[in-house]
Image 1 (cartoon, rainbow, N blue to C red):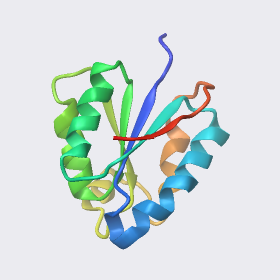
Image 2: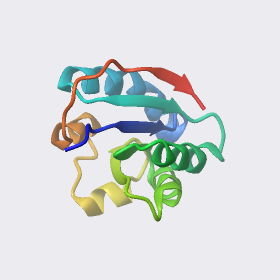
Image 3: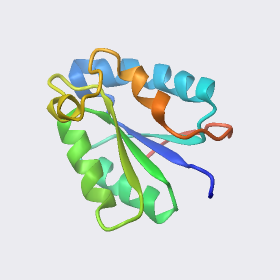
Image 4: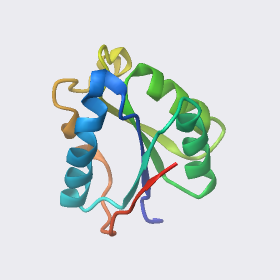
Length: 127
């Protein structure tokens, strides 16, 4: 089985700043779980789809959308037609998509607990 590579595409403006507050917590949580990942911070509205598409092209197993429903949709658009899976870390105001999936919207750090694990040093970069 190939190593799992997760790319978190994070929207710091989601949920009236909830996304920005969650980024370091998600970073720490993924490290503690031993999940191989890279954090990508969105700087503009074109970034979620672009960064997701690039992650898929680079061979990411999973793109994790950290944000609200808009972020999830844009990240999904970026990986359509690829082998890359979509994960959701709910950080929006409504999180309707996460609710429909049965994710715990009040405890977004619980989402990565069910992801496959592989140890790798994290890296942070901005799109």
